[in-house]
Image (cartoon, rainbow, N blue to C red):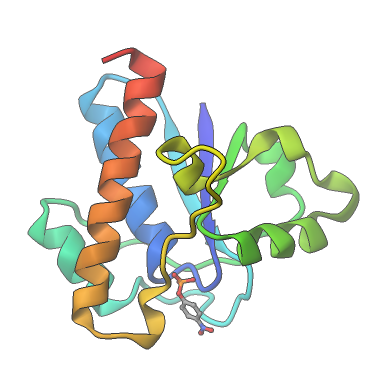
Length: 153
Ligand code: 4NP
C-alpha cells in the first residue's frame, strides 16, 4: 500500500506522520510505502523543521533526510491512501487535484482515532517547542491506531 501524508508546509506535521507510520509499519511487518507532501510549496527542498527532527530523534526516528515537496494532482494516481492533517489541507488538495481528485482515497488523518469528529492535527509552526512534542504524541497514537486497523493487533 502506498500512503501519502499531507499538510501545508511539509516541514512540521506530515514529515512526523511519514516517519512514525513508516517505522511502525516496518516493525509490524507491513510492506507499506509512506511519503509526505505539502500544499503550499513555501518550503520546497528544505528538511523538516528542527523541532520536528528533534522530537522524532528523541523517539528513535530519523526524519532529517526528508525534503519538503509540493503536493501535485498526480499524487491522486500515485497513492492508494492520502491522509490530510487538517480540513484546510483537504480544501487545498481538492483545488490542486481538480479532475484528478478521488474522494475515496482521501481521509482526515485523525478520523482514524476520532471518526466523524473532524479533528485537525494542530499546526505547531507558530508556537514553541512544546507544541512539537504534543503533535508527536497525537501523531504517534493515531499511527498506532492505523496499524491496529490493518493488522487486527
Ligand atoms: P506544516 O506547518 O503544515 O505542519 O508543515 C507549516 C509550516 C510552514 C507554514 C505553514 C504551516 N508556512 O506557511 O510557511
